[in-house]
Length: 519
Image 1 (cartoon, one colour):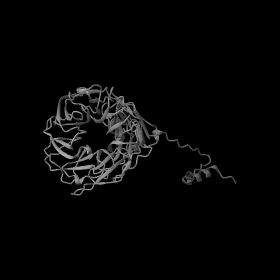
Image 2 (cartoon, one colour):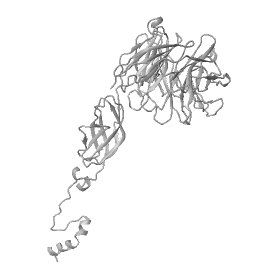
Image 3 (cartoon, helix red, strand yellow):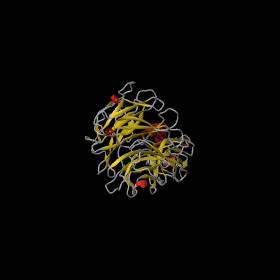
Image 4 (cartoon, one colour):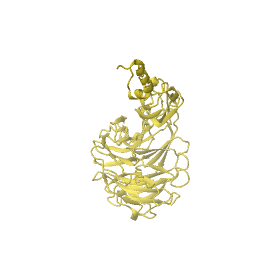
């Protein structure tokens, strides 16, 4: 018998909850479909007030200080109308996706202020989130035409060091002039957009000063200058010029370190014996053995040299690099060997009170010829000091040697060699564009015609570098380079010694400065 309709409705009324739970409909009823949620309905109004933004990624995570970089923040909980700030800069025109998982915008300009900035997202409900150092501004590296600073009568500049000698917070220059046996100090007068130098003060030292170091070795609070000198006759020496808080250092004191054939060439300042006084480590480039010497500081500017304490640093140690390669809090030394083998030789600071204070490690191959110089730094971002060598060949290169944080350096291999100019001699490292990665600048002596260049290569943060870009200035031979912000405008400048520019006599050589102008 057919069941009356009213009975069917009654049964559905009784069992309505069960029927609905099973997804069925009763006869003689109408089911209204549940609406598909729209983005605006995805979160109930009561929950909107609680919605908290979360930043997962920012891509790209860097852009030019000139602005204009298209950026996407990926995450969750972004409300329509959310605001974005990069540091103190408020982003305009930020667009939030319908599902609240992305925000896109164009980074504003931040002229002259490279470096990392926090990224802050704030919802209309006032909930906010921040990614520390989420976006890094970098400058587009450019340099003005090079200008030359000369000192009459002083010839053959070998090495330049920016240093504040007179405590006025403006960088001065200390320059070793090899051919005139002087160390010349130039008073910095740079201000604003201008780079300038005033009084030049020459100080006579022993024959052929090869380079110059600076530190307070006398313990009086003033910066002293130290120069290794390759005397033409008799003994090689290290000359200590005591600072007095002015542009003009005091009367030099000389420490003999062996016969001329040993050629004192490079110094590093390090506390060898743990007495909190800086001692001097100097290479003797002409000696086949016992060619790493130590000069022990008495604390008042006097140094003692003991030939018996010399160490063997391999064949022709051309220069020395200092850094804590094994993270023990003590400065280690690496010798760049220009002789056979194309190696660098690490020396661990062993921390003992008595000689020998350094212990030789295992030589590491650069896989390219004649490493003249090296610079230490964390070039791949793993927290360990690495080494980049400059290899003095006609087809000049630099080599990246990865440090393991325990004092060892990996061989460069064939993939870690990068092209620079002809016959490179010296290298410096700095973050030229403010992106947080170390870059390098290389002084290239150049071909016989004298067409030397200065190469700069931007680091990628993984131990590799972008292709070189070059600076030049006529008939030049560049043999040392330094990087510093000479006029305190937030942009790094490049300083190089031009060993033999056009001219003779008093016009032979000079200091070339390229002012950083990038934005």
